[in-house]
Image (cartoon, rainbow, N blue to C red; front, top):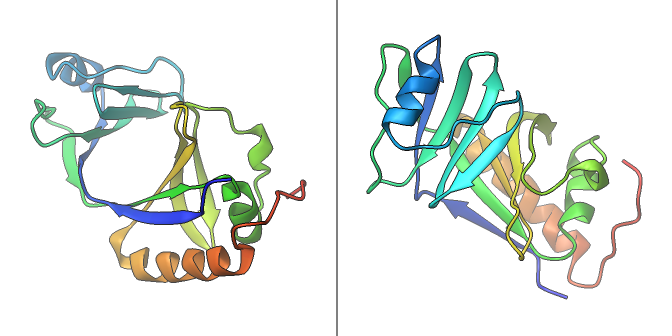
Length: 162
């Protein structure tokens, strides 16, 4: 059983792209273009999520080509990685969503401890849940998740149900 761990991430530059040029801007930057709303694609360390009909959030490594378009704006989300085998037990304490339904590679927008967040479940062999929010809520969210991690501990199993 791997230990629960909440790690702040700051490796990406975050962009919101909207409007009819958004897909072309992603392609020009050699970034993936998800086809369905709430689909996310990780490629070469970059993550792109489709958040609306012609809206995307792009998480781009600093060394990669950054997207450019008229309606492409920089965001400064706080991003956390929750890892460990009991991550679902942690999330069951702070969110009403039944995370047993979340499949690897999926994207959600949910309230976590009362904070509007986006979430992405990695498709890598070691499961990691990425959680992002407005930086104004960063410390509050981190404090809440750290407290739940301390309560859940290393031996907890996900009890089921939200």
